[in-house]
Length: 144
Image 1 (cartoon, helix red, strand yellow):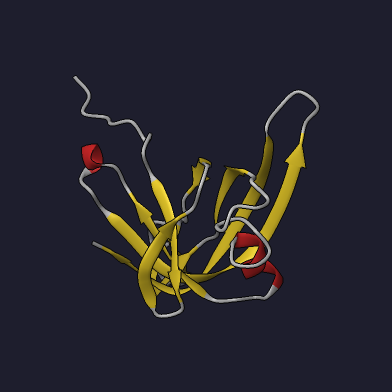
Image 2 (cartoon, rainbow, N blue to C red; image 1 turned 135 degrees about the vertical axis):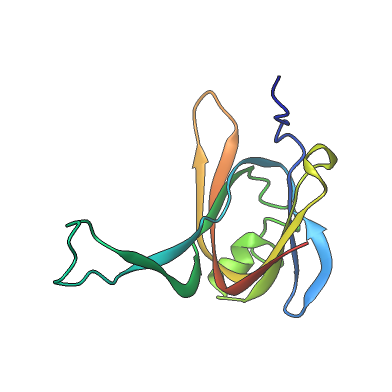
């Protein structure tokens, strides 16, 4: 039997330039979380008798962009051009972000500083007004 848990209930929140307090981003929909990666260093030598490459992981860790969709509420304080995600993109403002996982998955938090690098509203004739948001972390991430 699987121990899988639902992802329903994940929260993305934005804090000030130094971290919290955090404010939950309203109307969050689908989320693609940052990918944690490392480059690989090829350490293969000419006297390798197996003819397979030999690799080591780089010491540098990388964090990819995070993206998510919101039900775009143009006047909402977490979405608008004055204090919201759109303002962060327009003004290239660095903020702290928090991803809170639901209790079923262990109440873990991912925290990192970053910039909103994309904000793309969309409106279908027979659908919700939405926006796709992209955030690029700037350096390290903590997991607690």
